[in-house]
Length: 465
Image (cartoon, rainbow, N blue to C red; front, side):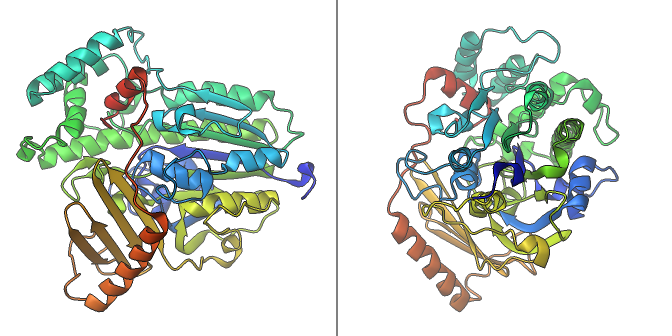
């Protein structure tokens, strides 16, 4: 094992719900405004992965893969028996610190394992206007009572979120991240993970970000009612004709304002790394857990689906200054590959439980050699699985007995199911999925088991329940 002084610092900055096509360096933005100048700069200094695929469409499933290098559903105990990346780095002499803002990333799910310093922000609300003192218990009861009526639910949700978002802003998180970076002496290698919630709905930009040129002029009440539609659309009786083109355009603009704020937060961390003499020796990773949908497949936010707007994610890495890096990496990369890659840079052998492979060589070669990526999700009694190859995307939904096959090269937005036109391809991919599922065994989601009332309230605020 290398001497600790010779190992890079690792800073892992993750952004909830960040879509790949809203990150400027991927060249797909349809507005004349750079939402992510800091991420784009890091991509110029390092590498962007063009086909990074999350192994699940939700925070819990994505991070189980990116922190343990195991498939989300291969162990009924979820996180309990899997070595975490932070544990392996800690055993290797790393100082470890985490700053988390999503209820699925808390001690309850085991994500504190391996961290010397674990700051859990869940339960902390943004207090943009100093009026975040509305009583959660009362508002939760009102919320549940009025959920039966879409109109009244919009009102209840609006009152609840009027003074604050249900998660801390990136600036609040960074206050502690920067303080921590200032306190470290740099003698031991550092692993720091910070997760930003800002692009997650409800999309409630602060005033300075509501003034961005691409954001329409909307009252705060209009903004709140718009965001409530993301929860309402999950109701079977909701009239989806309420989701007009104007609604989608306004929601996307508000969402993008949140992305700009998050990029500004990342810029502040980069500045702190430089001011504290850590930047040149740091492996800096920018990643999203999943994207958000804007009606590409009939829904909003991140519903239990495995289309690319949710799982084809941005992944940007700035390597240490002494490491040669190519600007763009082609080929598939799974989130399972993150822990082995980080451990490879740290000179630590991954445990045998890790399923992924290091992609360190691809920073020099410009390509990975992964043949496919499997993503999966369970939602109550349903289980869906997808298999992505460089050319094809196969999705199977077992509860609804539905299969889909898309030609990614000719149909990147996955609108035309060619399953019946290409039976040989479908049969081949179906068999790979069956082999994977046989190895995993049957599994029902336990994500919501044994949660207390406070966590249940937090998950409801974020639209998970």
